[in-house]
Image 1 (cartoon, rainbow, N blue to C red):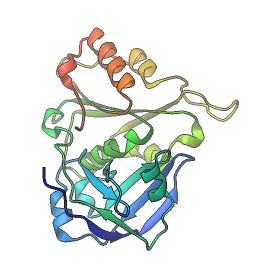
Image 2: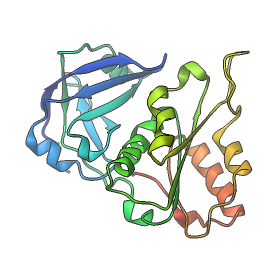
Image 3: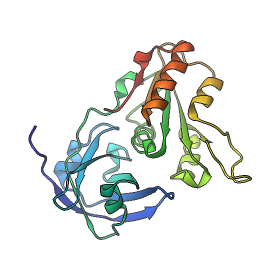
Image 4: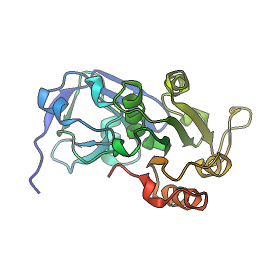
Length: 232
């Protein structure tokens, strides 16, 4: 495989979303990068210096004309990117990867299932719904975080219900008195929800254990594992 070409793109916006996640926005994109982003769930490679590049999912829909990321601290490259400020550049490749198969969700009940930084590519799917590129029968977004302060883009997500996307968050370890919503893992919400029809569709992004548990729970409730899709 040939090494990708990298483009230096200035950071337009940068803010801490949670103690672990940093939201970065790039606006001034070369046309070849914008045109390569066609499907929610695609990713770019980002390189810092001469180090090994990392893979980061795009956190906004293709029609939005910008690139957004949720960078999770905890690895050397991610920490270096999270420390950057507006005006500094990211060296990024063109978007790549197959992304989520939107055609599988058209006209069907769709569940988006994610934890942590997995919100990023699933948010891109939400944007595709809002922008009219994807028209499912219904959309439910089930998202898990450690606590209320670890919920990124919370105000935006809570407004999705007015745009046809039912968003429900659960916290696995909320501080006492800090969270009035569901507690526990996203798998628990799946077990409590009404079953999906056999032709329903799940787009998932998160830890391998979560995805495997979700497949098991959904299969026991009538949804074949073949109807659960990842973005890679």
